[in-house]
Length: 358
Image (cartoon, rainbow, N blue to C red; front, top):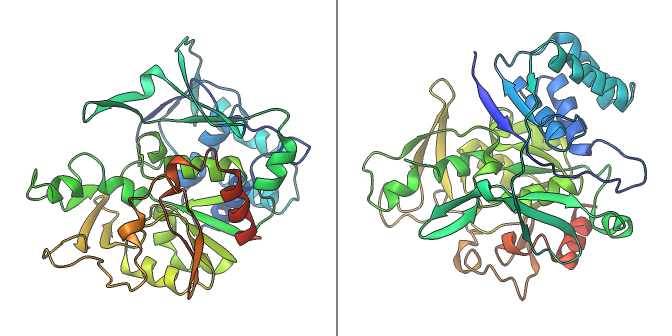
């Protein structure tokens, strides 16, 4: 399949050395391993490559991707690298092949966009650019937040960052799709009668999805492994490889995903409102369809799985998290508030999360 994807990286999420020597984030290596074993597709691996570009580990500023097809020898190199049989430099050389041979085309552009700095006391440099802001409900909201670790904070990052931890966080592409234009919420608000089926957004959903964008970026920059729910749905048994599963705002899932999550022995439900509604996925049409939940197909239906541990109310609406705590359920821990606004600034919460996955 051929497609065009235009990504403009004016800045980077800076990767400074958390543990001494500069390194590629562990989750990228994990993606390489899963890709080499054919457990995730080429698109997902290329998203990891785009992360390296965005973080200037591979230094480019403008990428146009046309045919996203990768030679088999690159997959072999990814496998060797994930097993530490080749070093980071050799692996990056393989990725440079993709660029030099125009499998991924690279051009350079110059920009002088103005930064809008976000206050994140002491942990990260956080900002958006003017073009990241969009008018939504008479308020300008940034749809892309950029992070950089602060030089000199290495000891702090040792306390809140992870290394070689067998945990995986699931990025909510399906939920992002549900919130997109012509999505489920236009049906809920009686704007559209047939918006219970919606296209799956691109895997770079973090550029516009507000639900757990900050959480996803914080976890990635601190070294947590991540996988999209698209890749998880295609292979639900993949969770068996990990000691801990971290859910973000994974509101919309299939029945098979729901079963795999609630049967995993150690899940951290970092955001309330997870596992709230059932969907079906059609990859041929690149669509998800709402099946049950959130007042559908009848108004009296709340949680689509009738899940007794649903913590949507009241916790989804507590975004200040002044009295946050994790509490026990049979297969893990749940947070009693919606942490999106505090994850960039609350050191104690990040320490506790690390303790829970260690």
